[in-house]
Image 1 (spheres, one colour):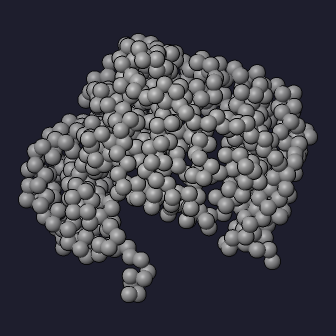
Image 2 (cartoon, each protein chain N blue to C red):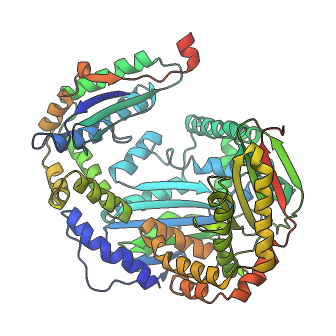
Image 3 (cartoon, each protein chain N blue to C red):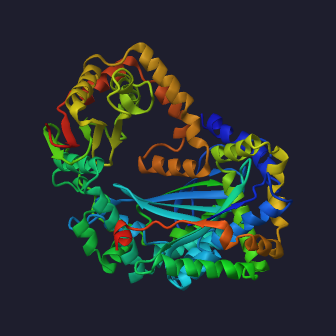
Length: 442
Length: 177
């Protein structure tokens, strides 16, 4: 299916690209559509989709261990680190570093997730050396100047202060604390006001040195670069990193479900979260659960939750559900927000739909329609090289096979009604953890 | 924020709208631009500063210059500094080298645009809905390449202060005080 997927992008782009630009884009017959495994002389591995449709290269990479590697008393450290790597490095101060990125039209960004710390690098075909040099500097020699640290700390703190009154964030934090207890997953990725205020330059550089290593690195590359060209570039960017990361392994989590918590926040609406058992990505039932979630509330305007809560009764603008496969725990979440006086009725409906799915599963028609949507829309995930590079990283982080793109739609097709019924029972049988955030009752 | 009504690609004389595109990039496109270098990096009066030109319109287009002050800098001080940068642009501060750098940044952004089908669709759709032609989209990079420093300086001279509208966003306390 990768062939189909990439053909969408590859067949349309050259025509338009040639039309848009004076540059001549040479299209030489069928383009390689397979994912290659590339290993540099220094031992850095990358998965590569070589594609010369546009004279660009997109790279995405990730170090396993993101916010979950934050020290217990310093939640938010990885997140603050992610804001400071492009604020000057080596001999270049922040302004000079940014000017270099712009002069060379290099796009560089970093972000901290719960289980990984990721970065992306975009460049024109003729600026590969400059782009990889700048990335190498950012990873190995960031300056962490006081001015930059204080500026980015102020920005993060401003966000955390506004979160204090944001019902969605309050609900997420309360939910994670209830479900995960003392586990690192209970701590917010962007930290707490007290912890972020106390983070020092030494904390930041310490985490950088422990986290950025070759042992926990995965890389995805898409675009106008061959395997042979890419190898030395990988060593430029990553070859100088320590061989082994020295961060603690995230302990296995045992989420505990059940119980209700209500937080009072003034406002017209009540935010509702409901959560229960999910699956790890490697679970054999994961694809069946993914299809089940699509039918229940995962991603369309015709899901059961959408139909019952929004279309039939007008209780909410939006209602959703999703599988959350962390490295060490799986969650299943659903939520919505509604006028405060309708919150109780809406929560009852939401709960009833989860129970109904657990008891009865979907109909054969619902399953057929979900498969058609999921397989048909898969190609839309491949309409940009950055998106494809991100997926290459995702596959490696989840330990999925290198030919996953090719086989993914067959995995969806193979899901049976029995599979979905079994997994619905397995996940949605309860107990449920419920959090509501809204104005005081009455 | 200072805004001017300026010609669009529909209403401009040949080359005029292209010069405004290059002017907006040189004056206020990112951290290599004149406004950013002078006000954010150099004099440290602003936390953000830039410019943009909207030339995709059936009738007039618009040109905007914006800046947000650093803590402790008054809007009046910042506005005076913005005016100085604009005045320097009318006197040739955007020279051939600046124009070349701006042109290269615009060229790079058209290459990045090709990586997104949605962006390409929007570019062609916008042109066609304004009675433009596919050929006009195709030849835009060539026309941008022909813009020289004299044309950009002339475009900057069109940004006369008495034809603009300036808006300030203040904290409520500032108004009361």
